[in-house]
Length: 234
Image (cartoon, rainbow, N blue to C red; front, side):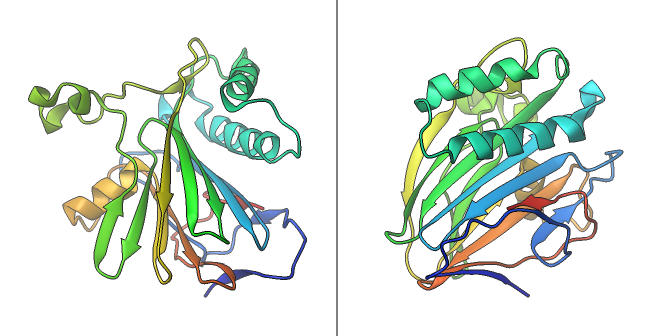
């Protein structure tokens, strides 16, 4: 199944999706609940999506993920807005006091459907990949300590060097990207890409992904899911 945004429509779509055919999302075997959240806004020329993967440690992870994804999406898409780093610093102030102990990774992708180009703005290990046939090209690299200190090895891959948290603002990394007609864009949490890389039948971490297929006449979302906590706000 797919959801389409077709050229000629001037409407921004708003609301919740809990339909189980739009997203890959699997709750991790070692997690009490899925703490991933995605927010999407699109018209015939542009698609903007925010994905958040909140850690369980703070006790309010699901609410934290929903808060940041929807707040970032709605403010980023305003006709007039502050420069990005100033905007993010202002939004960061909203994390106190409710989310003082929460931690999360997030990515925002801003996609120009007309020119097959876009930008990812991210902190942590929610990543974007371009899928061409059987080949997958990762646009972004996770902010983990073993990428900074390569001698540490994969056992340190879970230690983030940038993270969203209330007591310290960390600026995002920004990367531009392009794709070709027929490619698929895959926006996913760390649990998803680690699960796919390992080829496991069961994932220990939350594993969520948004599949975006720009086709020249609009944009289609296709996926499947096993539960409905990972919702899309459009």
